[in-house]
Amino acid sequence: MSGGVDSSATAALLLAQGFDVVGVTLKLWPQDCVSRAEDKCCGPQAVMDARSVCAQLGIPYYLVDEAAEFQNRVIRYFADEYKAGRTPNPCVMCNQHLKFGTLLRRADQLGAEFIATGHFARLERTPAGRTLLLKGRDARKDQSYFLFSLRQEQLGRSMFPLGEKTKADTREVARDCRLRTADKEESMEICFVPDNDYGGFLEQSGLATKHAGDIVDPAGRVLGRHDGIEFYTIGQRKGLGIAAARPLYVIDLDPGTNRVVVGEEALLERSEFTVGNCNWIPFDEPPAEFGCAAKIRYGSQGAAAVVTPGPGGTARVRLREPARAVTPGQACVFYDGDLVLGGGWIRRFDAV
Image (cartoon, rainbow, N blue to C red; front, side, top):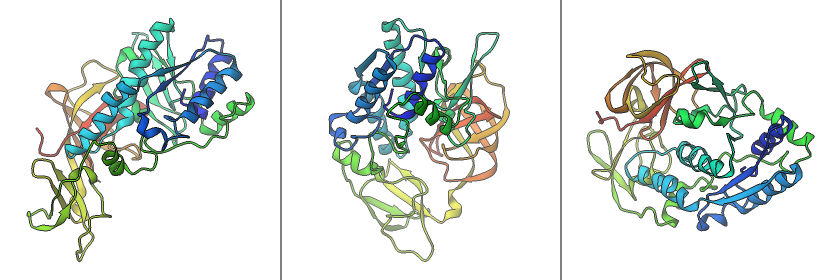
């Protein structure tokens, strides 16, 4: 329970359906984040709200300290990806390793059969015993993108009671139960970087230090200097500190040479790329080739694509129309309508 309205409504719905419910909050925040995250899902206020909701509902509540695991699995990954010239997605990793990893182990200790979260996504069980992942009914809040990496053993023991509901429905559930979180504002930021200044977070946490390098054009001509590739992302335009006749954008980050490569907007378009560490949900082995809608970031609508799985958990993605700012390190998730087929992590474009 994050202390927000979604997990609060989830607990209330399950209780109304007759389940024996236990509330659990994973304490994930590092101590140096607490002062900046008082009212976020990783802050002390969130714990107070979650505890209060459980008291109102009359269910047990546990606060479990997983800060060390969060540091190792999520924050270290977050910093390492930026250092490697990639843009991380910490929410996917937190789901995979903490919310549906550590939490499942805690469920076993409590004798619980399932874990339930406030994600806006749906699950279907097939007669063959497989668990399918689908988009939430509320297209504006669908969170299936962040769950693509979950394995069958995780999905099979999960419940998403909000999958058929809208955000407005969820708040109404909480209001009907007179829960203090009913009208709580939701956060759209990374929980441990509440001000969205990820570069400042990396510096202040000692996870990255400034190290000067060149800003170059695609031909290698030096246009300016930068403080480290960790502080840039593909598609970035602002903050480059260079003058040019036309707008320039970050089109590549080279960790080998510590160079930020910039170019005109047209150079951001890409129609073919490779993903790695793929996870497939409806099948153990994917078809040799299949069509789908590919989402290259959470906010995208999904682009028509053909996917060719390869060796070692890789796949080649060919978009029917070029997409802007395909970003190494981000997840690319494949859909057939509402059904999540799977996905992988976008590789640097020179990777094989």
